Image (cartoon, rainbow, N blue to C red; front, side, top):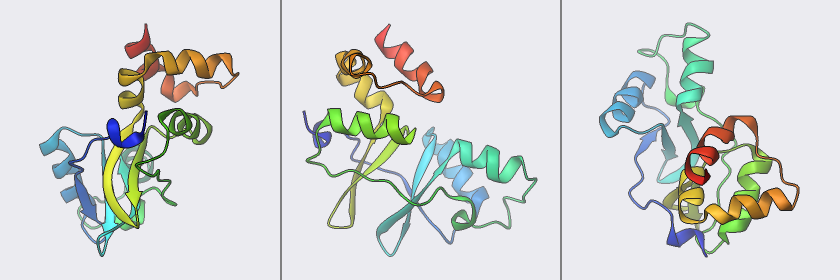
Length: 148
């Protein structure tokens, strides 16, 4: 199975020059946990709930005066729409990443998440365990929710 078969195609994005408070409002409006950060139409980073906790709240940074580009996660790890789901899962576990933008020729095509992977291929997790790939602690909840 290819990534393009399970990816979300309507990705909500934010510019790196926008304020964090506006990004938070966008995330709340769409009820999502991350935004792909774009600059001149190219995906350059991710802004996640964890980024908000670690880089904004924990440091008492003002979200009304801080730009997304100052707190986003970089470098951006991406996958190709033709990548195999199994390889994408291995990459997620190795890098401890739960969300990966799907990019082709520098253009953002979609987003694939750990939830997408385990929802569409729960047997994939068992196969990865048999190969000795350890599921990172921060990913366990999602895996257990969909597999068990």
